Image 1 (cartoon, one colour):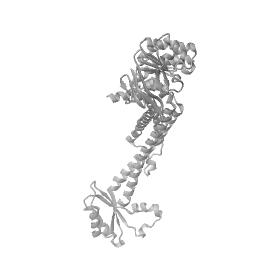
Image 2: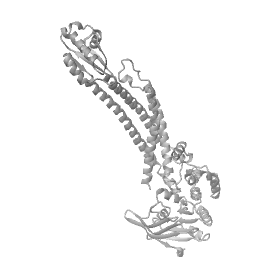
Image 3: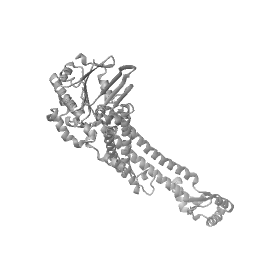
Length: 300
Length: 224
């Protein structure tokens, strides 16, 4: 309760204590600008991290539950092997359903590479079977062995080969976003510390006079800390608001939405940026308090 | 209240003060003299905890100053009013706010208005209450510094060349204020090289004159 009381007193402030430090235009503007810029960048780093997280989740969960069986066989054996594959899949625990792709679907898959005039019926194209798994999944090694026995031309592709690097990349991107946020926070702390140190150096006479009249360290420090915390809070509020507006005006995701078009916040994720201003104030509070007490210690 | 026992102080390998012993008792009045650079300001700073003795022991109100934290020194300083030659004001605050600053830092703002008005009247600065320090004359600044030094009703008043920047008439006026404070029971120590001021004070108050010479403190009453 006492801590909350102190925090409340810190927020409401002491008019006289605030006035003992003269207003310093340059460091004030520097602090507000630095906090606003850093908050703006943090909004984007946060959006990047959340979007990468969504991507990793999607690739990790949705694609993990689907796989493909590719049948490459001479034309006279193709139907027999297809039948064998479908029978094997139908009796494999963990397979939810299996469906051979139609010629039109296969043509649609190949069209981007070979153009619309591809004579599909004259080419020895492998047949594809789309397999969906149950939540528990199937035994891939066992299924491969059974397919090798029943349909020698069938190959199971469970997407692991290309899915895992993508999931890893998305996870790495999410981590990079979080690292960026930490670095931005540290940079904010450094900039505010420098600004606070400049203000403390410029106000050496104020500190001397306050010491002379019996001011405790906490009184002197509070006069600087409160000022810089509120400036960082104000700057971060502006930066966060501008960042959120910029994100809101990014192009929206469509059905073929790639990564860039899905960069914005979704649903409750819009609440995350609201954490930035109080965090910036906390960083400023810690940075200025450390700088102030360090200066007071050096000048004792 | 403030006691120095065989205190030495030096810096950069040199010694400025050596084996100084001094006891500022309640209600006493001291002048501290000596040539410029002899260590008068340093001795005053040792007395209010702004400097730490390199040897010996300084006691502030019964407490050894050496192991005291900065905050403990600050609390002790609330019982010591200090007047500097250069006054040391916050130029962006009004005279009234500067004089009331010790009350503000001690969290006693409620006492500020009544005490402040009485005090400004006593030092003759009521009309200048809203003025900024740079707008004041040297004498007004010195009187304001004295008002700030006594607003907390301290037990001890230490004044470092308080008449250094003012004319003789203003010097006598400041001296009168210091003597009045002493008669109210305050311990006063004034560092000055103005022997005329000391002679003038002798007519008003029973004061001991101390001289710093050759790094040591001597009783100099016989010289006057």
